Amino acid sequence: MANSQGSMNNFTFGDETRQYYETLCGGAGATADRDGTSAIHTHMTNSRLTDPEILERRFPVRLERFGVRAGSGGDAGLWVEREAKIRTIILTPAMIVVWVLGLLLAANAGLFSGGAGLGWLHLKLLLVVILTGYHGWAVGYARKLKAGKPTMTGRQLRMINEVPAVLVTFIVILAIVQPF
Image (cartoon, rainbow, N blue to C red):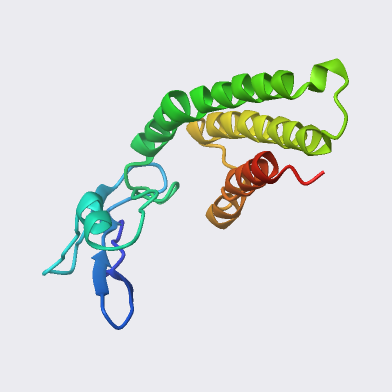
């Protein structure tokens, strides 16, 4: 026998001028070896479930991702498929562009002809190498997820998900400020 989440989760934010309140859907009927019903409200009415595009238009927020948590049972197979599409359509091409532009920047700055004072560029390229390694790790881990053999918790994955944003932030700062 499988059960649902019971009711709903709430999400709210705002200030003196704008407020937003939303109930978030959960799944129903998932078991350890079988997908459940997609993320729907099961014991709740009057759900708002605003489309992400409308939420972004009305409020000063950017919704990065809206989906079912991996391993929750709802849409399990679809989650792996969606992640593969994001990786194939966005992340891998972006990584290639980063390398091409980085090498062009290095050539233009004189890195390959012994240019002095380019410590910032050396560090930037090192961070790009680390970012590339992270990308490779993520591709490998996605294969583990697809095979149903995850080795990390959802919390660990959410934490490690911040690595690319931190690396890219430092890469951009180094390229703009060129501190050393």
